[in-house]
Length: 145
Length: 165
View: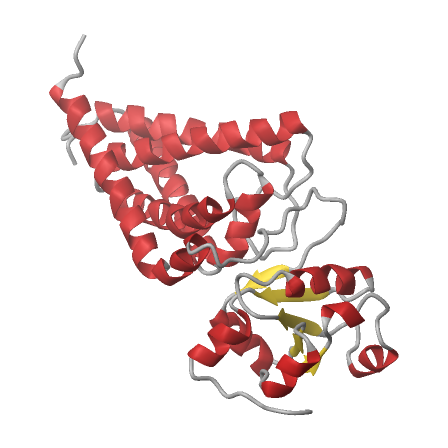
């Protein structure tokens, strides 16, 4: 494997890991506020907004930490890929229904407002990182790690 | 074609990672989830697409304690008799029924820049949420709703004041 490919792999892995570690940590810090963000999507029943808000950040943190530690990279990337795909479906649904909400992707208490369409575009970029990380890791020695 | 052993291993480990995250989340927030599933919760989690532009932000017990320490104003949305029987320290009484035309005394006591923490009788009580809508419409910018309300505060053994403030 070329040095450039190896560099690209580590760049993708660390970017993805840091991104989800940060996203998960800030959401886990205020689960109730994140539940409100989830509720804004108007997809789940009331109580399930809390279940998603209470669990999703920790899945992001665990997968992000594994990527940063360069352990179980392909399973962790797969988890984040599935999550990102689910986010994209939810955001597409918001966009189709014309809801004007903050995506709640990062700090649930933040003042910023990221539209569903902007978040969807960003998720395409994240998905590219996931695919690159997953594919390159599979071509490296000791793919079980 | 059946998945290879490598694919099966990756899928299995991905499931383990997911389950680990879920278990951690459920462990850390089991009380919040029990409340949400007990049927005692407030009317709804606020959504941004209702006729009103903004909604009060929910806040948990620890957040309420912190906000009050930082100078937030607790506001009791229950009936006056319940307020007199016991309320959060330094809380102002503003029953929902009296808030339709906001009393001048309340405007004078609480500036629109204040952080307000509204509460009523717990998860089954929508008054604090409804009061929050009114106060936001009146120009108050930072309005939070403590969904656990007075029962959760009282049950946590936190100090309670009685009578007029």
